[in-house]
Structures are given as structure tokens and as C-alpha cells.
Length: 258
Length: 258
Image (cartoon, rainbow over all chains, first blue to last red; front, side):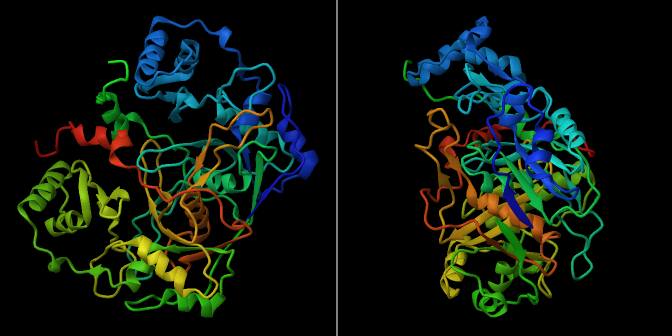
């Protein structure tokens, strides 16, 4: 397996055709997995926003006030409003905002970026529907290789961020090893491998500081054609015990202002 | 970045010198990251166990009974005892066992395997101290390359398993991008990258069905010498809100037997 960053990608602006640009710069073969940082997809889709496009609701003001009381910060309630607008559910409101986006990804601040912004924007939203975005780029590319839209995010239990997939096309999200057996004929315990997340993590090692001019990575010599798997990457709430537990949980440390 | 599985690794048994074996089969250079599946480290360290080495405590019997009532299964209370013995804390007891191991990793069943077992063993425990194991192998290898001991595990919010690091040596767990700036001079939001986990995920794509004869992967053309970072991969409980929330949570679905 080999990974290489595509060189020479210009600053992406609204309306850019990412598939066409990649075909022109360095056309990916049908078996090269194309991993694209969500930032440039967001930029091409015009997802930059100014905070004065948002009017803070009572709830957004309460959220920002509580966080500011806690740490003496100066959060803008309009940012909290933007997070609410991008969220299907705000799972934690304190001591930070953890939300489930409308498309199913769970992340801090609904994945809204405040660096690597388009001109004149204060924030950059995630693509509205990364599955559609991935499908569109997959279709645009002449040889229709697998496409993954990646983001970096933190996670429970372990410190640090790592690459994850938020959209994909031309490849299942997971690989199903059910039915495979070990050397002694026993059926394997590990049955579902989240390959798109592993590919996004691998690509993130090559991208480095994320979006500094190397937002697209090709993975060669891994994909060898269709395999068993499915697209259910985001856990449904019924089997997501962590999300259930967090809904009931309350942060009980005193605020600086209390 | 290139990844290749080391070919020709024999079945590992207790007492095997993994570093010496790798130097002989395919000596890694000082800049090749050596990712080793924990299974073979456990086997070399004699971590296979028979269930009749365990005597189920009252608590272990209660745990197994509850799970069996729930789904009509036939869990052996001695397995629950083995999980308890390997755990610093059992975080969830129902509807499955989620525990923090003594060395800090959080996983289902304390990471105990029931496939890919040594001869005559019923279960395979994780290495007792994977940091020490990684350091030992790092020291054994002639060119002292970075060494990562990997495992596959599930995670909250997202389905499927992916590779993670449980021990490492010769490389920090995380890479610190603090102080780096984006194209427009703004300090980056993503500051701590969990590189050992990303490397373990990348390697898992090459390993495939885990331990079927390809348990070691070399990562070339990524490591270019020391970088800023630290070894705090496992979150301390004070900042692990998910672990705090899970401690308080109770699974409230009725059992099949209720």
C-alpha cells in the first residue's frame, strides 16, 4: 500500500470542480482510493459563513454564556447558533459542544472550522451532505475510483485527533470478515473493519497539517475490487450506548464564575 | 508513505524473540515504523490461558448470569473472571463488558481474544504492559526503529473496528502542531494528532484478517526523525467525560428472561 499527496492543488473557491481538477493534475486510476479533506469540499460548495449571518437564539445565548462563565472566555453566541443550525442533536452543551450533525457524524462544534477559511468568512461549515459530495466527485472522475471525504476529529477515551471518513462513494464504509476463520478453523472475532476510517487516518499522516496545500491523498495498491461490507458507519442511537449515556450526563464541576 | 507486511513470519510461541526474528527476516531501517499486532506479542510473552486457571468470584458469576439472562447465551463465568482480573475498572457490565485495562486502554472484554489462540489455550490476554513490550522490541532491533504494538477495537459513535496503538517506543504517541499556522497566518485548531493510532489503523489495512500470517507491517517514508509530541494517549479520567458518563449509565432494556 502506498500513499501520495497530490501536489499543486490551488486554493479552492466556491464553484470549483474538484474531480475535474484532480483528473487534470494527476488522474487517479480506478483502483486508487482518493481521500479528500472536507475543508476543500466545503470551500467548493460555498460553505464559508460570516457570523453576522446568524441571529443568536435565546438558547444559543444561554449556551455561550454558560461556557464563558466557566472559563472567562468570550464566545460569540452567534457561533453557538451556527453549531445549533448544523446539529441534529446537541449531545453535550457543557463544558464544550458535542453534536450529531444532520448527516450523522458526531463531533465537537458540529465540525465547524475557524481556521483554513475562505476569504471573508468567519467560519467554515462541513459539507451539507458529504455522501452526496463524495458521489458527485466519484462520478466526475474519469476512472470512477473510490472517493472518501475525510475530516479530523477527537474521540472518547483517547487523546488527540485522527482522520475519519464523513462521506464516501465507490467503496463500502466497512469490510465484513464474517465467515473468515483463523489458522485453527475458528471463526474470527473481528468481523467488521471500518476501512474508510482507516484510510482517512492513513491519509491524514501524509496530509500533515491538514489543509496546507496537500488536501488530497491517493492510496495505491490497496483497493482490489468490490468486497463485502456496508455503509452503516454512524451508529444508530439504539445501539449507541455512549450517546445514550451522554444525554443523561451533566458536567458537575463548578464554573469559575460560580 | 509506503506500507508492507513482513512475509514469512512463523507461528509465534512463548519465549520467541520478536525483534531478533524481524532483524533476520527483513531488517527494518532506523526510519521504518514497525507495527506489530498485539496477538503475537501476547503469544511470545506466554499470555495464553485456560479457563480452568480461573475461579469465578461471586461478582463474575453475577455478571455472566445477567448477560446470559439477557440473550439466552451460555457465557462462562470464568471468562468474566478473566476480564475482571485484566481490568483496572469495569466501566460497563451490561449489555457487554467494557473495561479499562491496567495499562489504560479501554476496550470490550479487556481486549481478551478467543480466536488466534496458542495451542491448548482458551483465551489470549493482552500483553501485561505493552509499553514495556514495545520498548524491549525497540531495543532488540539493531537499528532501533520506532515500534508500535497495535490492536483492533471498536469505538463509540462509529461502527466497525479499526487499528489502535496500545504500546509504542522510539516515537511519541502524538504529534503536536501547536504554533503552526494556516495560509492566512491563523493558528491551527487541530493541534494534537494521534499519530500512533493513525499508523496502527494504516497498518491494519495491510494486515487484513489480522493475524493470519501477516502480523507485522513496516511503514516507510513517513518517519523523518524526532518531532514534538507526548505519550499521553489514554485520557485521564478527569477529562474523560464519556467514561464519567458511562459510570453513571445503566442499560435499561428488559432482558429476554425478565
